Image 1 (cartoon, rainbow, N blue to C red):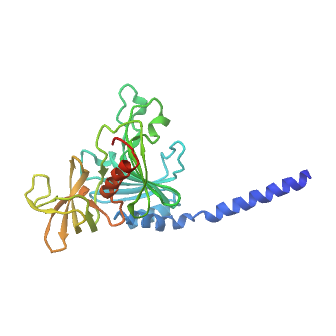
Image 2: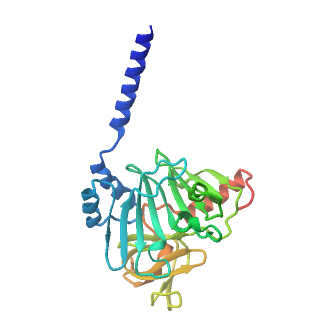
Length: 304
């Protein structure tokens, strides 16, 4: 009886092991999955990065030019209770105030995108110099479950006592669980309020088609916030991004991004702040937040 039981357990273990192994994507195929996930946000992976990643035997690699640096790594991903094993970082080298210290970060569990957020140095190091050099995730964050379900949250950089606490996800404000066609499944309120606006960080924007995310977006003649306004664009206006100027600005209520040159459907051209734009596959945060407010009113959830 004892032998039969052990044999049964052995075969169950082997079957489970085989099924798990069968579900794993070969490392040689990871790049194709990552490129597909990032294409929704109009980000691509340079061919040099792909070559270096393969050369490293699928552990890491990067590519840079005069203004940008894109790299994939498996280092410093030991987040508590998170099964993340690859990260791809997008860096704006042209802007000295953020430089390589602030990055757009895409975190993956093998081939699956699990989070897109901002990665930046931990700021509360006064009196705790052992924490210098630690980076944290903060700002507007897209999280994806194993089925691809989306949650939009805000992560915050808060004072903590241990490294594990610092690098853990620290939420503020609300998390919005998003269903099909931008429907709202649930709004979760967190204990900590957001001290600052929950906005996105875009180190640079690639050429392609985008949609305007706000009404009265300022199309300017020059590539800065004091440039002459040529036109006010309505929400969901379709534009073609022609060039990233790498002139970065933070704008209240929008976030941090470069000014980009765009062409309108009527052929007109001008400059838009990059945070006015979303890629065709990117979540429509403005619409989702509006629907979240409606969901809260309908379900008796108070506050922001």
